[in-house]
Length: 319
Image 1 (cartoon, helix red, strand yellow):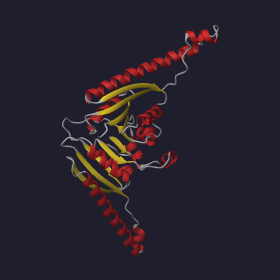
Image 2 (image 1 turned 180 degrees about the horizontal axis):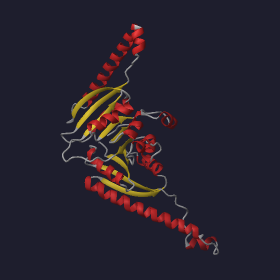
Image 3 (image 1 turned 120 degrees about the vertical axis):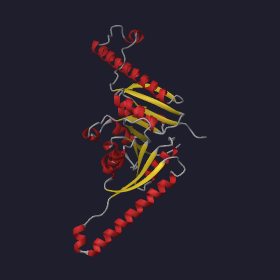
């Protein structure tokens, strides 16, 4: 029996968050799924004022400081506002996916960490977070909630950005390939989704070509070795694209392939913008620990920061 897909959605009530909810309509998600929407009031709740019984039991002369009462009242109001936001998000998701089972919850704390704690509890297939970065600088700022969740989560993460689409425009996806198991997991994730008949996918392999023209001119043998290496790299890229296309052969997707030279961190977002793609799918590098992920970063995190469209980073693909 195939389990229902479980989706954790972070929502903060902003226009970007609403656009992220609407973006799910173009993500090929199943008609039946379980969704948990989480809104975090970024406040830390102090201990509540003692009840009358507690006061009587402890000491009749004890009084709650007025400052504590004011803080508690302010925090309680923030959580109440968060609850209103998350309920609106639930209504919006149910309007788009009426067959989903959708729960809504408001909590207080650090947004990124609360998302990660909830993910550890639910073990979802996919986490969805919105992105507030509109400018190049905004997208490249590290330490944002979306980047934190993307880097730390153990499951797949979709950094969703809404797009203005013409009615009837096809869903377009770019899948970045590097030959790793993670990149083929991204292909299998796309293959498992429910896409309309006109959906399109472009399989893209980006590789760095060796270029030492001066040395090659002075030492012909070196130039020949470089040409041979570049030819081997291109053949390798073509084999990867062909293998990915075979995974998708039974789908209804319109498939094309592209071999491109350069840095994938730059070329994948650039290509997606040129092609007006809805989403870039990439696999996770799968660093073994948090320190490696933080220090080394990854192509997937860099693509998510630079892209104008949604980016889904696939980890531990399962249905």
